[in-house]
Image (cartoon, helix red, strand yellow):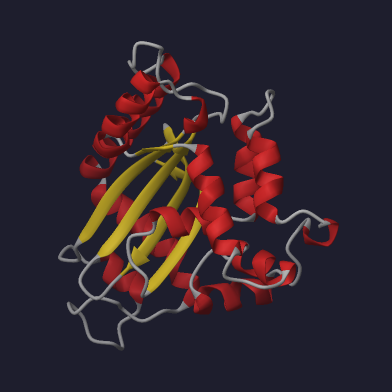
Length: 236
């Protein structure tokens, strides 16, 4: 019985692997994305296939909060076999398209901030959590805090694409730049992070439980009461 990271590696390294293949796996086991891209740990939740208005969709969004700020971190998945850089170390068509997509998200966020906060509030409201920042009293709920115009929220945009194990020296240098300037992450890093998470749990059952989590413990417990059995779990 393979650990989940090896199942993921088999999918991501398959020559015919598509974005939809890794998206389906990470939708079922999203905690690795939280571990990589989360902004704060007081309260956090990941949501797949989040729509930004009528024209855009993020593969995942992580909504989280600390004592001083909320965070909205958007994630765009491209194919694990999509090369992000040419042999000359320039961004490929696939990476340029992904960068353009995240730039569109950024423009949407700043032009439609109030509408976006209402959508975030709708997602958070069912969990009945308290306000997280120091702006409001503790008897105010998190969804009300999110819609308040003075609530501070930071946004970030990430692209997951390709496999750095296949990079040439020029491509490695390019990735050193783009991993910072455009927040580009490769699938082998996702795999290594999954392995790291698994190393902290001594049974497959605990690994599955951890990697299946889509939010903090309070979120997770309430989510599991609504979905008594996670689809596909009995097949492992």
